[in-house]
Length: 598
Figure 1 (spheres, one colour):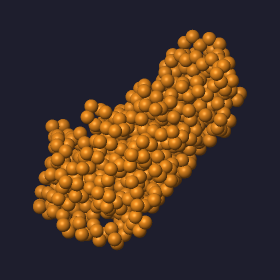
Figure 2: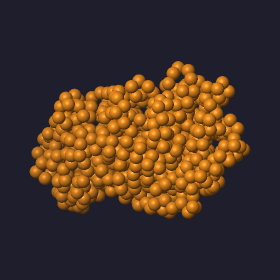
Figure 3: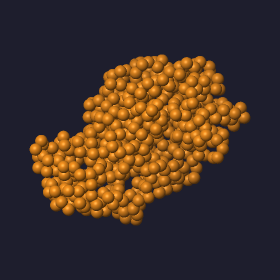
């Protein structure tokens, strides 16, 4: 198994993306394809929307995805269930006339996060705090290997949002508010997922830069909202990460739900065709977000026409209300549009050429759907993979305050009190997009280590560790660790208008302070929160973001085995009046790049 190594191509002389050898193969295949077979390649049906798996063969579908909560039957999220699930879909495509392989896609945004037992890395905001492209590339490599271990070869990541307003519920999917840092880390993630180049190696997974573009710039941080700015600002803030990803060889790009100055991205020909494909020279393919083209107008056929003519190559199609076969509607509408001369044959050919080019580059035609290497499957959640995530957690921690050298804590402390429900909540550590779309509380996945368990492993056998979720009956500890923060959430449901630390969390920290012992507060959150008294009442304050399954990465630093090295990937607002990054309403509590070392 190629653990954390560069990709080694299964064919040393394999053509690079867009090379003449692959183009000849694409030309030859295109010349044999009917219009139905071409349009089928442009369809990505959600697994839950397929009324019959044989439709993959019947309609020549080019891709299937599992979005959000589209899990194997019975929500069986075990490794073996996912392996069987994905490979079964792929087998249907090879029964079609031309045996064009299917590519299966999944949201693997902080590890192979749909799978119970996979390693869950810090969300992107935490990876941004590392300011370390090497660890981001390693994260991508581990994630790719775990994805490949379940027979899947396409990850919907990295997210290249340059989030400007923390009220946005997807802020944690953004590495930084700084386009330079997003560009650097996004390119590293692409290299990690795909390898140095997209290839036929079984651990080279197709990356998907998303969501093009300016999804993180919407007014008030509203999800799927409208970004209002001139083109100079748009190009300065939101386009550099995509240019960097293209230069790193990214094979696919997902188009955003959001709008720029009132025009939906899914129908923006200037950005999709003129900028991405022509100006930036992108040779891969564009895929829409989940039913995103449906938002262009009330008429679905018009939506298909506008999006395809704008440059969309593949359309993600879940089941819609009263439309279990929505992918069939798409196919029929697009065929009619071609017959009516409203979508040209050349536009169809361009889209299909791009899709086939990537599939050839990945070696999908050459391998004829071989069985997944058992070593890859066995390595999912392995100690070696967890150690990479543990390092990422260590590097992501940002020390905001440390009065009287409250940190590091002594491992030989006599009595350590731990308070806050988040201390013993793996789901809260991981956040959204963990096994389920919105995430959940408690033991949402197996194999991880909570902060409480990590604390108990870190201290000496003689240390008394007491735990109180609500901070009651503290007694007289020598120090208190308070774990506070946000409950799990994901897109749409994560938008907030007020980012104050909760009243309950502020009261918990105050009770801890009343014990008279030094209080070390650990914040689990997908974004900076307005800390108010919570910061004042803490002797030390650590932004731990959403660290994932490897809680020992946090205690490695709290107890001094490793130093604090993390730096803020975005400025920390001082009040709810200063939520928009770059606002002059008030000075931030902490600047971009801030982070104490001791």
